[in-house]
Structures are given as C-alpha cells and as structure tokens.
Amino acid sequence: AQSVTQLDSHVSVSEGTPVLLRCNYSSSYSPSLFWYVQHPNKGLQLLLKYTSAATLVKGINGFEAEFKKSETSFHLTKPSAHMSDAAEYFCVVSAPILTGGGNKLTFGTGTQLKVEL
Amino acid sequence: NAGVTQTPKFRVLKTGQSMTLLCAQDMNHEYMYWYRQDPGMGLRLIHYSVGEGTTAKGEVPDGYNVSRLKKQNFLLGLESAAPSQTSVYFCASRYLQGNTEAFFGQGTRLTVV
Image 1: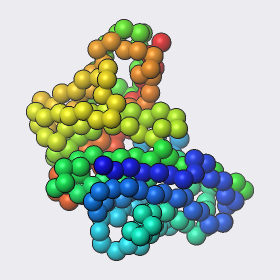
Image 2: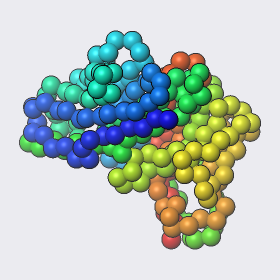
Image 3: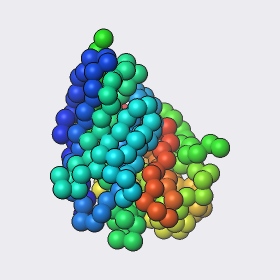
Image 4: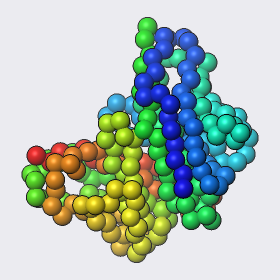
C-alpha cells in the first residue's frame, strides 16, 4: 500500500522569497517519487523525479527536492519564487514495478501556491 | 510527437446520457490510466491498463467502464451519467520498464446536468 500527504493545501509567498511545499509518503517498498505542476486550466507537467539515485533531485525552473527516507519526506523547494510559479503542485508516489504496485501512481491532494508582489 | 491526446476537451451531458472519452498515446507505452480531478481531492485513479486487452479497477471505478483494444488507445465510458461524475478527467501513460514518470493529456472537462 502507498499513500501521500501534502501537509499544506495553500501556501502563499512573496516574489523573490523561498518556496517550501511539504510532502510525506508511505510505501511498503522503496518508492519512486514525483512532483508535478498544474497551471490553471492546464494539464500536468513533471517538475522532477526521484527513482533511487541521488537523494537531492533538481528539476525544471529552479525547483529541487530532497528524498529523506528516515523522515519519509520529499519536500519541494525553490530559492526564489517567481510570479509564474503560481500553480497547483502535486506530490506523487509509485512503488517498484516488480512489487505489483508500480503500475499505479498515487497523488497527494495538492498544494496551491500563491505568489504575491 | 503528440504525446497523449484526449478527445473531447469539453462536454456537457444530461443525466442518464452516455459517452466515451478517448485517450491516444503515440509513445508505445504499456501502461495507461484514467484519473478524475476534483477540487481538494487531487487526482484519483478510476481504471488502468497494463497492456493491450487488459484493464483493472482503480480507486473510484463505479459508474465507469474502460477498454483497451489497441495498445495506443484507452477508452473511458460512462453508461448513464450522473451529476457526481462532473469532473475533469485526465488520461496518462508510462513505460513498463523502470519506475518512470507518467505523461498526461490536457484533460477533458465534463459537466453532467
């Protein structure tokens, strides 16, 4: 079984300040983890992914996330927010293919990021 | 390269009507999925397929049926639409090998009145 908890449904930051979007996961196996972004009325775009290589993962648009097994966390960060970062962000977990659970991606409920001037 | 294409993009149905949503992918992916997105609930898995001719139930399958007669296509059917099925529907696909990311379509906004 696997699950994802996004700890904040809404986050508001000022432009130029750091962004932190929190994600905790639960998985019976070593998971793969993803962050997707969805801009208003758009589809989902992959920001970054962790698939058991380096624990610090760099993604597009300056975002990065760190996989911490001991804390079962995969928080998303960005040093300096931009107005264009305003969107909804989803943390997603997937178990290894061979476990039989890897064919499903489980989504968190999303974090709405607001960026103010 | 089109990726994942969903048809239609918008639809309004009356309660009790039926319809089929089409998902097509040109990446030769084995896995395909249908999700629905509702405010505050993230994306929830309706049905999925691990290959041509196979389908399986996800988290919220009731009221939906699916078929995967060809590897590149995954159809989602609503036999008798209900207002509770008003949602945005997303199709996705991914490779079998490795725990890779999924690629998503642009979504279908369905309203049942």
